[in-house]
Image (tube, rainbow, N blue to C red):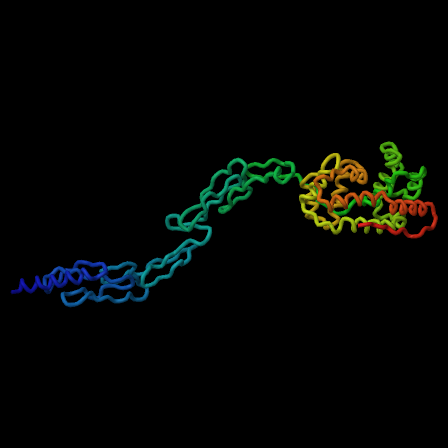
Length: 389
């Protein structure tokens, strides 16, 4: 009779564990002498009473400062024993399901039982694997073309500066511990040594015979020396001497205004140039084509690009023409006459042609005559600079 009942109970129990989802543990019931498969208790609890043939496992929550991180069949929870040491902080505090988790503060890693600082890579070496709270940083020597000039536990090797890509020359070659140093390019200034109107005036096709001597007498002896005048007369033709003498005077006479009042009418001329060039809406490609169409040596592309970024319209075009003139020691008015205009937009061709005509036309001739008379001490009426657009 007894055996029959026990078998019946066992069959009923096995049905219940097939339906359950919790992990099981084996328990031998001392009262019924039956080996039972009891449900384990979930994380955060412990077994208060084992299961019986009539009751399921009874679980109880872990008390304060105790935890159970897994399903279990224990009769008590584990004590939260971890205590964060020096240079550590509690990444996760003690709870019913986990022990206190300690971690090294930033820049340190756990080395056996203590937090040690991450390795610092010296100059010439870079970090190839950053340190973590559990592992040290890994250093490696900088490969060719890269450098590191710091001692650091986080800095990687950097690429050497490519001076060629920047359009500059190498001043100091780089190494594994130092970057390549490029030669500094002079900053583009939008100021112009001699304006187009000044150049046209002092390069007028038919200067008077006493033009150069009249200018010399007008210039302050402190602005231009006799030695400089002699060098200009030896180096340049009679027709070019007034221009180079005025250019020298202008570059050295910032504090000397003895000649400036005589050139006040040039402002009207400059307004005429602005009226010609100001309305032009040109692309970078248009301007590149324009500069490549001038005879002689070309202005460097990087200088063109920097001028376009630095100078406002229409000053950027005037500045570029000035750069071309100085690079070729040329004559801008003659350069415009030789400009190859085939690939230029129609509106730009028209304006460049009018600019050349304006700088050598009747208005400039009237201004030229007025300046001559003013220098010789005669009074004249203002010259009206006319520009036909």
